[in-house]
Image 1 (cartoon, helix red, strand yellow):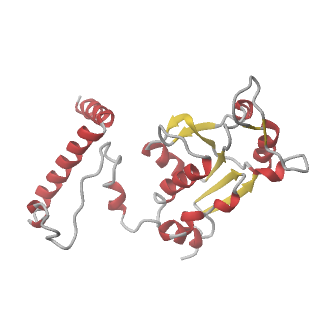
Image 2: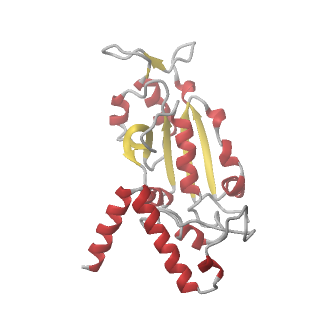
Length: 239
């Protein structure tokens, strides 16, 4: 079904616009893009360079390895394309992205995502545009483009009409403040491994309790930081 206009759109500033939409052009996100539920604009930062070589980087002041993206070129790209909403810069030094922030971004009409390369972007242009620095985790990528794809995927799947069953979204990891419980499907017996009997019982309340117990157990074991926050939040609700 066609839409009068996208309910969410993203502008991505990058020196590799050909990397988009990439995987977001397929499956649920790709279908939603084709249907106009969301929109994607890619902006080639090199188009705003001022020399014949289309240079976007230079050596860092103070010395050191690598190059830094120039503030004048990045500023021109931002000013030429930014039409409101937050400007997000993806960097390992940013605030860790969580599901709450993803939901907030999904509720906005427009975001602009700046993809860094080399050693990063001159801090002055980030400060000048009050960029929101976001990290996807304690690891380093070759550039911001893969991170931008991950961020957009997380947002797009929350938009109405993208994922078929809203209950599927409500029961995912992080929505309860817990990791998700394990899943099972046919065949019932596979390589000598069975399905937990409770899932075959048809007793919905017992299944719900088992899934909650499993979610709590896996969160305690794998993400003690999440478990600590979950316990604190539960106590705050009780009293």
